[in-house]
Image (cartoon, rainbow, N blue to C red; front, side, top):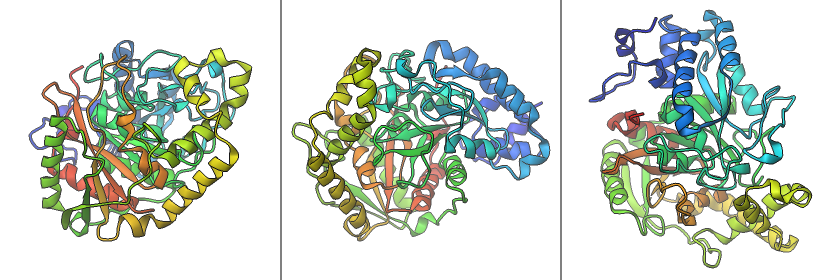
Length: 464
């Protein structure tokens, strides 16, 4: 059995934080080390997470489908000899419920698909299970990933583990809750405009959106094909790097953070920040100055915005048009099966003609082709707040300004990580965001890991 002595022997430097005494609170790399040493079994770890799910699911509604018995069978069947060669051997993972799972319903949180059961795994599912992961459940989300509050699910709103009266962010809210609350050690999200990074920021975990196309989306319900990214949600940047290596098919090799130059993008990303967010970001800048080669202010080319919106016009044109194209037949056949908010969002694409869409796609391709030259002329990474504020109350009808800092990086298709950098006096997490040039995933994750080696924000757990 796992003991406190064994947990204290794990490799993560905990600083002032006490070591976790429950296996469900381990990082992926910690648990993997213990299992390689024969000090923890996949079944013990899986049972710890399932116990957490049983206790917290009624309060937080993180899952649409819980797979307790299949998970136990899978964990029991994993051979000890595989621990040294399977990077995710025995690691309990949650999947956002838009990734197909053979024989297990995949709903995309919609009444349209309430009883839909795929016969083939998504490529993400296949790669994770081939690496030894144990699927404990399908995580709750905004319907068809088309919102950022986790309130439009046909299976009820998901709730923030730091305060259940608040949103966990969306659309990958259930995935973020599962990791933050110890219901799984890692989870998969998807990100079309911030759906990994905003929930990570609101729930105090690490959320990684890789370079566009780095992880295949075969078998995942799309929101907008040109903007969708698949990525991991974990407690640490090192865990995110481990999962990203599995998902892209080769390990991530970290770059020395002391060689990295970081540009602080003030306009428009630092405008209108909540005071506690601004204080936390300023402190984070000082930490990064101590671990990186250089941290300086930079200015970027401005993106044309949609009228009366904080989001880029090219971005909104593409997401509206592509979401409508995917949903038009279901919308015509059974419009009342959608949440009213989802239906209203889909209908925004009805008026976009083909020429407007084609020109928007052309502009997106130009931005992606020139990103390295235009954005990273004198720096390696860009630093922004993840959002201008922290988690908002459920039912508060928040502004799209919460996606202002995240959506542009989907348009550019750039690798971006959100990590915790502080807490408000009300114990709500605050997040920062680091973005790199195309395919510089290792640099982004290296800087995030270096920041976490100097801070303890990612070690804090909600009191639930």
